[in-house]
Amino acid sequence: MNAFDLIILALTSTAIPFLCTTAGASTVFFFKKEIPQGVQRVFLGFAAGVMIAASVWSLLIPAIEMAKEQGGNEIIPATGGFILGAGFLWLLDVFMPHLHPGSDLPEGVKSPLRRTTLLVLAVTLHNIPEGMAVGLAASIAQYGETVVITTASAAALSIGIGLQNLPEGAAVALPLRREGVSRGKAFSLGVLSAVVEPIGAVVAVLLSGGIAAIMPWMLAFAAGAMLYVVVEELIPEAHLGEHSNIGTMGVLSGFLIMMVLDVALG
Image (cartoon, rainbow, N blue to C red):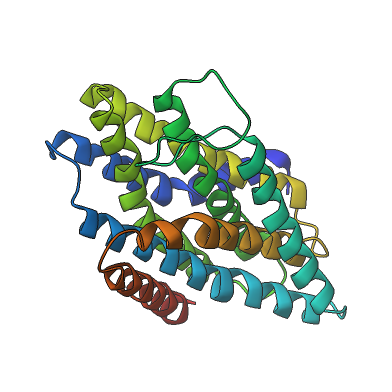
């Protein structure tokens, strides 16, 4: 396979998540006010549940099984890649300036960037590991000499990530609208936040280059990065305020839906 084929595969595999983020951002044209806090908590919890299930069934378990097929020690690539992925997102979280919706305290290094830009960067952090995961799964299904990840299971991952991108798109556009940004610009910035998904997919598949020995490491890397986002941001935000059990139900629902998708299609 050549680099061009890998790039095309990465871009097509992230089409569903990208379009779902776009659809989520379009809610800015239909809601005059912010989505109720209870609904936001459900959405955040749902996204967390999908990402937890995807990290386990679509990334970590395949990473372990691929390492076994290669005759190596399956523990080292699974744990090593996981730690590297979580560490990578931790570094981005520490150094990249961003601002979470509902907060007045920017995180990361001090920056002269406007609040609107910082809000977009916060969700952009989520989308990097998601794009990597979808691109890697598609690459292994298409070119990998293994049955660990099939075309159907790669499609299930893409659909699952797409479902949780629907509320993420809204989570970018609606707070921007509340900040006084026009509906058109808020929608555009919401779509822009999803651009890192195909970029992440391209980078991941090019780095792996179809080399079988690297694939378990890369899958575990994506899992570690995704779970960092879940534990650091999504779950805490889903449980803000009273009646946090609503966020918990969202987590459980997202987990079950992603698990069913992976088992049924995989």
